[in-house]
Structure formats: C-alpha cells, structure tokens
Length: 282
Length: 255
Image 1 (cartoon, rainbow over the protein chains, first blue to last red):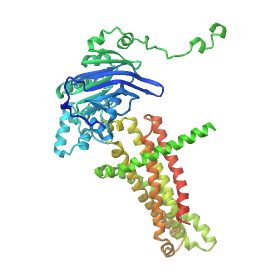
Image 2 (image 1 turned 45 degrees about the vertical axis):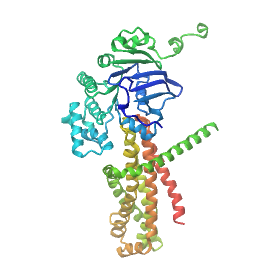
Image 3 (image 1 turned 90 degrees about the horizontal axis):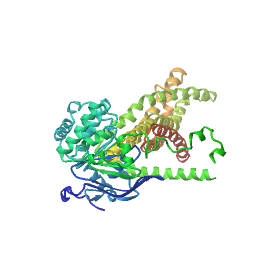
Image 4 (image 1 turned 60 degrees about the horizontal axis):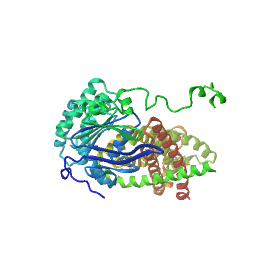
C-alpha cells in the first residue's frame, strides 16, 4: 500500500489532484470515458456541465467514496484507490467537502458540528477547540449562531456552517458540491466571496462542482466542462466563455435544444398517438 | 422456477451482506467506550422513551391474563394458582415476546428511519469524508443501546404484568384471590432459571431487532421511499424473527 506523502515533499507546480484515464459507470451507463483532469494547487477549479454528467460522482471518486472501473485518481501524488482504510482516512483528513445540502449532523448544535472533526481527530484541550471553532465560525460570519441547532438554520447559513466544518482541520483542499443551488442572491454572493477569500487566505485548493455558469466563471481560475463522459472544454474562464464547441455553447448559453436534445429519445408523436399507419411508416 | 431461483439467490446474498455487516458492527462496538455520551443518549432514545408503551402494555396484558386465567382455573378449583399462571405466562413467553414486538415497532422503526434519513441527507457520507467511520459513531452506539435496553424493558413489562397494576390488581383486588396465595405460589414455583431464560430470550430479541433496524437504515435507498421501505421491513422482519426465534428458544429451554 502507498502511504500518504506529506504535502511538503511535493513541488508546488505539480497538480494536487491528477485524474488519469478515468472510467466509471452505473451499470451499463457510462459516466466517465477515459477522462484526464489536473487540479492545480492553490487555485479554484470549476467542474461544470449539464445535470447527470457525473460532476458529483467525480468528487466522490476523488474522495475515495466510490471506486473507478479503471484509471487512477492521485491526491498529493498518492493513488486514492490503492489505500487501506486507514490510509484513505488519513488522506481525507487533508480534504474537506461541502455537500449540496450541507450534511450537518442534525442532533448537534452549530458549535458541536464544527467541533466534530476536531474532537474526533485531535487531542486538543476543550479551551483550544472552543477557540478554533469560534475562529472558523467567525470566518464564515456565524460566530453568533454557535448555539443554534442545525435544523434552525436557513439553507445558506447551513452551508456556511458546513464550510466552517470543512475547514476545521485546515485541509489542503476543499470540494464544493453545487454550493450555489437554491440560494437567494445575498447568500449566493456571500458563498462566492467566502470560497474565493478562504481559498486565497488559507492557501487552499478548491474544486467547485456546479452548473451555475455566471457565478462559477466569475470566481474560478480554471474550468473543466464535462459532457457525454468526456472533458469537452478546459481552460481559463475567458477561454471557456469564448469556446465554440457546440455542446459547451449550448450549456453556457442555456439553449433548450441542441446536441443535448430537448426531447428524450422516443418514437414520433404521430406514432405514439396512433395517427401514423404501418404503410405511411414504411 | 427462474423467479424462485432469483428470489432465493437474492435472499441468501442479503443474508450474507447482513452477516458481514453484523461482524463489522461487533468490531465497531469497542469504539463506543470512547463516546459514552452518544451511547447514553441512544439508551435514552430507545430505552427510556419506550417506557410508557411498555408499562401500559404490560399492565393491560397482566390484567387480561388474570381475567382469562381466573375463569379457567376456577373451573378446576385452582383459582388460588392465578399468581403462578400469570407469572409463568409472562416470564416465559409474553414478557420477552410482546416487549420485542413493541420494541420493534417503537424503537426499531425509529432507529431505521433515523439512520436512513442520515443516509438520505448525506450525513453518513459527510462523516466518511471527515474520516469518521459511521459504523463506530452512528451504528454501533445505537445497536448496543438496543441490545441493553431490550432485557431491561422486558423485565419492566413482566413486573408490570404480574404486579400491582396488572394481574395482581385484577386477580386480588377485583376477583378476590387471596394476596398471600397469589405471591406464595409465585415464590414457590418460579425459579431463577425461569428468569434467566426470560432474560436470554429478551437479549436475543434485542440483538435481532437492533441488528435488523440498523442494517435496514444503513442500507436504505437515499430517498423517501427508501426510508419508508427500511422502516416497514424493520418492523415486519423483526416481528417474524422474534416469533420464529421464540419457538426455537422455547423448544430448547423449556423442554
């Protein structure tokens, strides 16, 4: 088994995450077909694409929650899927993940949610845990909400608490799964600013999975657009905006019809309504 | 024929998965000692919160047994033996079995629904991504709490059924059985072995119900239908398992 390598032993120019020849499918449905991705250190990388292209699945593959059919995912030079359970858990301590719905533990308060990873993975005294939790909550603007129950939070507040929890152990990388979905404009603006600020201030590497084009392109350093199991466009936000790739254009411009058809494959409407005879069909 | 084969294969595969899950669960139990507060909270949830239904049910079962038993025993001039009739029936059978069925409906379904909802809302995935094993943090404390709560609840059920709010109330206060005869018959005939065997039964039922509940919840599909199925399956499978195991245990214990 490979043992996780300390980050200091890696050159900063090498990508933190390297995805090579990755294939994955659910049953006969192929989600990824030999894709290659690099997530550079210290940058905000966006993974975009229409619904069902496997953006969240990619995060789960990077986090080692599911295994690829073939190919590899390396984090900090270490193959995620060739780790023992403890090796994988050691890698995950270096990653944070913000789930779409926050995934806060509903039987704990805001404070206890953020303290949870610290209590589980450190032997810090209670006074230090308290200080760290308050600092993390201060970073997301919710220090005053520490005593609220998780189910008393609005959607936006829940995600901010989840973000404070995700950075509690000072990870090298944070993965954001659809962070902007269902947010009002104020919460959306707050989350965008937080993602960018935390990335720069804490020296993080961030991966944002989203289909909110305008928001993501405004804060990302690098963008991958996925479709049909392949990476169809990669580059800076400006390069992506100027892409002429037809599937990318349909996605970026929000066109209802195009390479991704509006209609799910079906016989013709006339056939379904019984208006077409066998002869006319022939 | 093909359908029978597929159903049998799926059943055996499910049983194999559940057995592996059980061993993983046993391996995770020592970690509960690191988190005593979580365990105590779960003991409160599955044990203390089940007390009301257990106390009320135990009392009514005892009252009904006294009414039915006295009528039959009186026909043979053995009305004074009502105490030991109620005690044997409750200690050997109804205490563990009815408590098990109530426990499956009250605590088992709650355990399955809670863990299933944690799965559906990504709380379990969130823990895994924080390098915390949900088996140790979520499943093992709930399982252990169920295993410990069940014999205690069955004991309380039996005390309520035999005692002053159940069989004694109806037999002695209403039907006129001599209180001395009621208690002395129990004292003379009920052995410590009967009580041990009752406790073993309820412990086995506690393990079974808790195992089924946490397994169903942990493997629930992450949607409302999945949680609903997990809850229903927990109650149905636990009830059938309790009745089947009761027969097997009775056949071995009370020959």
